[in-house]
Length: 339
Ligand code: ADP
Ligand code: MG
Image (cartoon, rainbow, N blue to C red; front, side, top):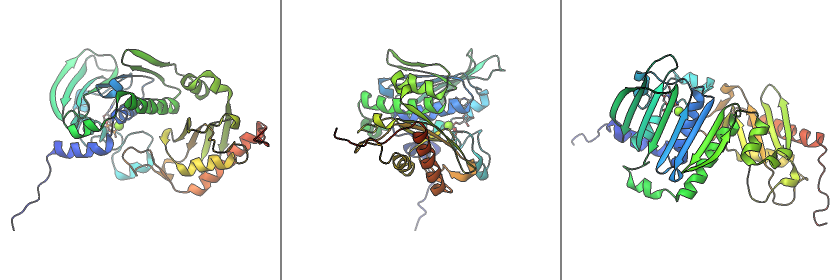
């Protein structure tokens, strides 16, 4: 029988890998903003058109890239963040897979402009469907600007699968809020079509929550603090009387990374036991810090799920920290729900 196996060409492999990393414009927003944070930026601008279907652009004032790095950055498995597999357990950056830019470049038109602080001139790179179109020297501000146009232009089936600009923008906004909450020390702005939606000054968490969700929210916050060897817990829960039937502002961050966890959510509900009206869910903005080697964030390419070495202890500490805070602020159960 004749041999039939072939190695896929690089751009085909990239398109397939892109399916895992990039589901929709919001995925691009997440990857580009995380890269800007990793680059040490303290000002990050997000510009979006048509819910991100036409344009997602992130401009940062971070470290920038040399011309060679700029060209390498869009190659698969090209990363400045880890060198060997063991590094996965000491991660302090958001990225490490070296996949995001390669994936995005494979399925969109990507334009990158970048200049490190010490260089006089920057680099302007254009890529389409994974192919480099041009590289030029250019005058550019310090930092990096990446724009991603016409997502999935070369995969019509995926493009058709995208929802309306309104729905896609809702997802974009979710990602923006998560990153803005995780990094109150960084200034952010968000423009959608012609409108400026947010201009968030560098600040602290309480004020950032107020800027994002309204100043009234600030008065509803109860601080949570607990420091143990296994986990450090900080942040806020909302007073139980403001709990709502629909799920709204519930955020967990582990080592500054937004994560989804029904297990930890359960710990919060458990701490509020007896304080909530039936079927309501309290808001919370909770930050957990754990030693990087005690978690595995490599379970899924988008890294929103996480595995703790000792999840039962984390659960117990989180629950007791919240209980303690609610007690300290003398929040008492609503005894008679009907009156
Ligand atoms: P990862 O973040 O996993 O390393 P990416 O594909 O997201 O992979 O980025 C590849 C590399 O490109 C990064 O490791 C980094 O060196 C560089 N890079 C990407 N975005 C920026 C940026 N905004 N500023 C500076 N360097 C960047
Ligand atoms: Mg990245």
